[in-house]
Structure formats: C-alpha cells, structure tokens
Image 1 (cartoon, helix red, strand yellow):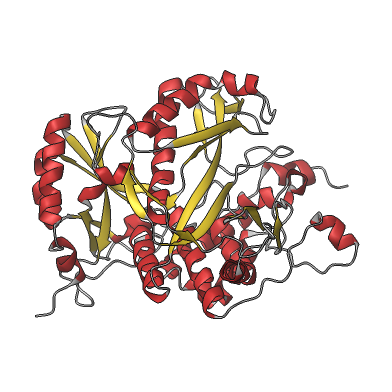
Image 2 (cartoon, helix red, strand yellow; image 1 turned 60 degrees about the vertical axis):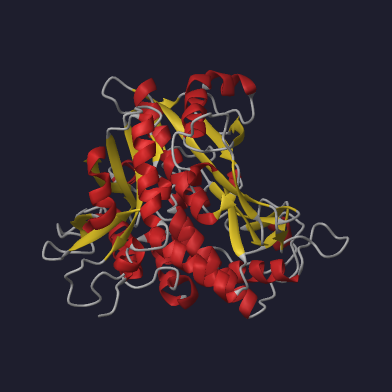
Length: 491
C-alpha cells in the first residue's frame, strides 16, 4: 500500500520528539488552550481551538474542517458558497510542532500553524497535500526552487504599513488617530501606547524589531522586523496582523489593513524586499528571554551565506547577472503579479492616486520610487506593487516562480531607469502601465502560465472565483459616488 502525503508528514523523522518537546513547553509555560491555525486564500487566519491536553492526539490525527474554510466559508453575490459547496468533504489539518508559540496577551493560550491535506477517505488522492493550502504550497514551491537551483533560497523582508483609526459612538471608523505628517516624531509619539504594545507582543513571538516610523497618512505606522527565509517572514507578517488586531481591542482603536481608506493621502503598501542566497545558517535569537515562550523555530533567523544579488562590478547600482535575470522575470510577469500583490478592488485606488508615489509602471531602477521595482540597496530588490491586503504566501510563491523563469531563461530586464518615470515618458520613452482595475489584473493572471503555476491544483480556481466575485460585486453595487454624481444629473 502506497504511503500518503499525510502519513509521510506525520511519520517524518524526529517529529515524535518535537511533539514531546511541545508538550514539555506547554507544561513549562502553563498553556491551557491551543489555536490550530492555517491561512485562507485571502490571507485570513482560520482554524480550530483545542484544550492543550488534546495536543498529542491532534498532533497524530489532526483535525477536520470543511474545505470551504480555505476560502473563508463565504457566499458569493448569488448566495452560493465560494469554491466548495456543502456537499464537499473535509480537509485534515496537521499541526507543525516547531511553530508552537505562546500568545503574549493571554499566556494560557498557544498558537500552532498547520499543514492541510485532503481527507483520508477521499476516492481521489486520499491524504494528499491540499492545494488550496497557500502556506503549504509556498513551502513546496520553495523546496522545488531550491532543488532546481542548487540550494538557492529566497529571503524576504516586508514593510507592513497600516493605519490606526479612531471610533465614533457606534464603533465605526472616525478618521485616523494622528495627523498625516510623514516621519514626524510628535505624531509617532502620539501613537506610542500602540506601537510599544505591538513591539512587546512581537518580541514575545520571536520578531526582531529593527525600526519604525509614522508614515504620511492619518494614523499610519510602519514597524519593521528583520528579513528572513520567506516562509518565516510570511508567518511573521500573518502574526503581526493578529497582534495589531489584539492591540486595537485593548486600546479601543481600529487596526486598519485596508489599502486605501482615504483618498488624497498615501495608501498602505507592503513592499517586499527580496534577495536570493546560497548557504547561510539558522541562528536562534533569544530576544532577552531566559525561557523562550515558544519553540526555537519562532526565534530563528537565517544569516550568512552568499547573496547572489550583490553587484559583481564596481557599479554598486547594478546587480550581478543572476540578479538581473530575476528582475527580468519580475518585470516580464508584473501584469499578472499585480493580481496577487494588489488583490482587492480598493487596491487600485492606490494605483490611481499617483501623486503619492504609487508604482504603476512596469520598469525598474536604482532608488527610483516611480517604478514598480527598484534596487533599494546593493544586494536586494524592492518589489513595490504590493499593498497591505496581500496574502504573503501567494506573493512569495509568485515571486519564486517568476524568478525561476527569469533565471532559467536568462531574461534581460533592460537598462535601469534613472529618471522620474513621468519625465522619461515625456521624453518619449514607451512604458507599459500596470492593470488599473482588479478585473484587468485577473485577466492578465489568466493569461500568464508562470504566475498561475504559483497557484497550483485547485488554488487558481479558488482565487479566480473569489476575486472575480469580488470584482463583479463591486460592479453590481450602487455607491455613494454614484448617487452624488448622478442623482440630480438631469434635467
């Protein structure tokens, strides 16, 4: 009898020892309850909760949940469940012991990320990896990339902008907490109760916080943590959102991840700074804790090795040949990438409000914020066409796939643009513009086999169905703008 993916996963070498180590950590920390988490197609955190005394049983057998949970178990505009109907089976979630971490806001509770599988009783591919598991897909795509490129690994750092909003008497948004003054310490200070609590919780969950500032929208903060292996970075961004939501509950504000809640001020981006490395080693950073409030993996960062993006000439503004091929892959596929990096109807408000450095052109340069991709420093690229609503697992998977295409086919990105892109266009340069609506971006995604391969199996079908329904629901809606514009249009 052929061993299934789920059996290989549960019986992996040293996993039993890791399960026992989690039990010891649970007992040491006094954890009583566990969140078993996975991430949906849109980046939401989903899952189940269990008493901690059920840990060993769940670690062996997993838990079951309807397949539709991977698409939020939401209805489309016609009232049907998106992705999977009520007749569909149930997935199996198997916890990953190394991801166990205590929640700092209630130390009785711990969190564990899970890998998802098809049900053991399915007639087709029983116990196989579930392709609507975006987190599991990223691990498998990255592993395949490493196998194809002699161990080359993606390391990623993100810049998670978001806004802290006040509430009115009904609990609805009532403007940003602070004034829209970029880098002003006084505005940053006004949000000190927020960012100090966020940093406290981040540190307790393994984040090495490195810097932060007040951005140029009302209540807008950006707090940065050290870059790392792409899966760990995606997990930390997911946890960061969880932390911000909890701090908002404690301080009675709204943690707003919406890309563009206000026009005429900057939107919330989530630039991805990427680099590919050979070698390096994982190192545990204890963050000052004598007893780590979780397994070491949460506090581990990859460091050292060879960065293939470093220039190989005296020109520090131009990457070496492998780095140029990666840029070439991103630029060539940037239209389809936009459907993943700018994943909502509201995302395109950011691209239309171009006076605020919105990255709307398929070009690249050194320190050039008018292009979709820039070399932000020797050894790393900043992919700018990503906003705060991104699913980081899908984005990382897509970056790996287009980088793979660029490396294998040695795609030439052309010369970097040093001018303001608008000046270059006035001077006659022909520059391609990114899709400017979600509908157009989804059309580009449908035509791009390389980017679609980052959404394997059922994932592309689910993502396309979910996002097309979102776009069509917008088109099917009468907004305040419609009424203000047309209510007294005639006679």
